[in-house]
Image 1 (cartoon, rainbow, N blue to C red):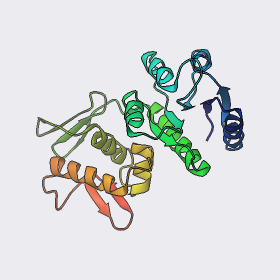
Image 2 (cartoon, rainbow, N blue to C red):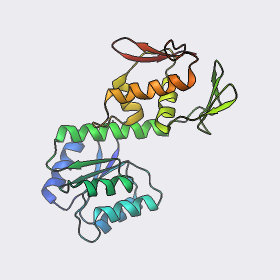
Image 3 (cartoon, helix red, strand yellow):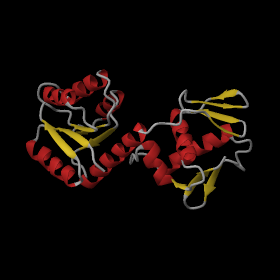
Image 4 (cartoon, one colour):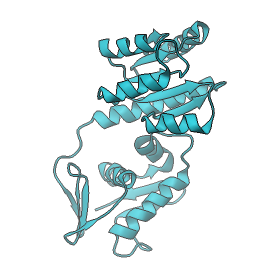
Length: 229
């Protein structure tokens, strides 16, 4: 997988090491060592993903992230920092960071996070179905992001809606929980396969006539799930 990665890190040795390993994986990498330099790089050529330190000269990582989001950029951001306090993590996620990784970190795990987020970003760019999808008495509108059953609106969580679209997009195919984690959640290591199961349970309870004997969202033993109209 290719992609443009902006590494914002004031430790030259760490920045160079990240650039080397990312380039080995096939990514095009730019470096920035200060907050203002990071914002200039984003304005010059928005990356597909940013790895962002918090303790930076000029403007700290929180300020950089806030300005990036205020400018309308939605590319994934991985905060990579030595600051592991819960208050910092909460602040980062409230500013719409995608992941928060504390130093010291595992390089292979970081590269997997990068791959997963870029994969999710690529899938998000694919055009979604523009016409409603119907099965039984259920109608799913991908554009309005609404679900109705027998003409009545059904409230589903945003993640459950994304999961439903992923299952529908692969109609008739058995999808593993791991694949669904990658496609819908971006394969966050904090998300377990039980999360997939709980969201499938939500969909069955709200959309199937008999959740215990589903007609549309089937369990594939030892693999995952399959959708059939």
